[in-house]
Length: 70
Image (cartoon, rainbow, N blue to C red; front, side, top):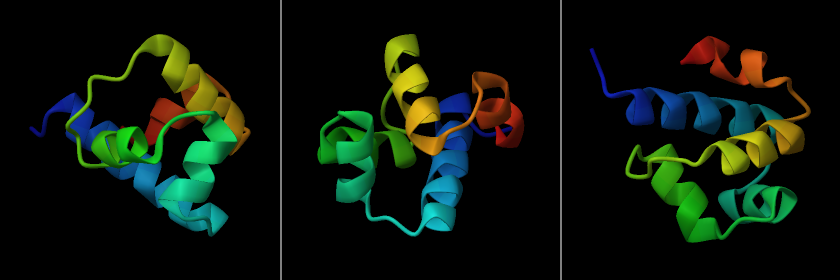
């Protein structure tokens, strides 16, 4: 089974693509750095809960829904 960070990153990339926004646009929506978001999507970052909440808010999703694809 893939590492949870990789699975989360893939799920995030899919949802971001559905929004039709670039990594840079999405990072701005979250209040995060673009390189940080790229690292999340590649599964290189162990994302803090506060940042997961920012991501969920930018996607307009409850936390539970964000993790559904993970």
